[in-house]
Image (cartoon, rainbow, N blue to C red; front, side, top):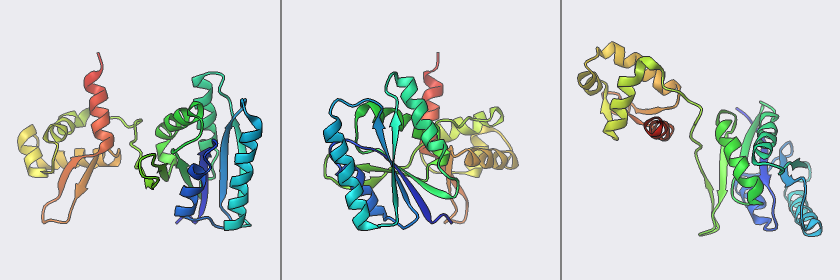
Length: 223
């Protein structure tokens, strides 16, 4: 189990969007908070004050925790996404990677969101500071890089169409496949994170996962 945490957060002038997720989740002596700042800023003085405020609060919470600044290129959207991907990819594999998607300049926030979706397998938690009620929420990130193995297409589409829990026997009946074949397909789709299962009842039940929903939408919308 990972005990060390690395927080990745864009920083704007509303420092609560950085500090609230940290306070909610906790900050340990070996944890790191990485603040993402644009490589060029219009109001450097206010930006530096925001960083100083965050550093002071983090010092009060846990003096041994570290805080660092990563400058992110905003020259083009592609460059910003690449820089954000680099930051996420560089997180130590022994650290719990926590990405805060609740604030900061939109020039960095949107590319960071894209990077987090692309590298969702390396992100342990995504936190969001709500504009509606100022609560910190945990958002599960869908895996948009997953693919449907060709041999499982009929099984996958049957699960998508159902939109609710299905038994293995029902899937076998609707696809005309053997139950053993369906079990292999279900295992493949579950490993890819495209479906979720429930084994609380006597028979295992299957339904589409959020990642599977989005992948299905992308497949059906392709020309």
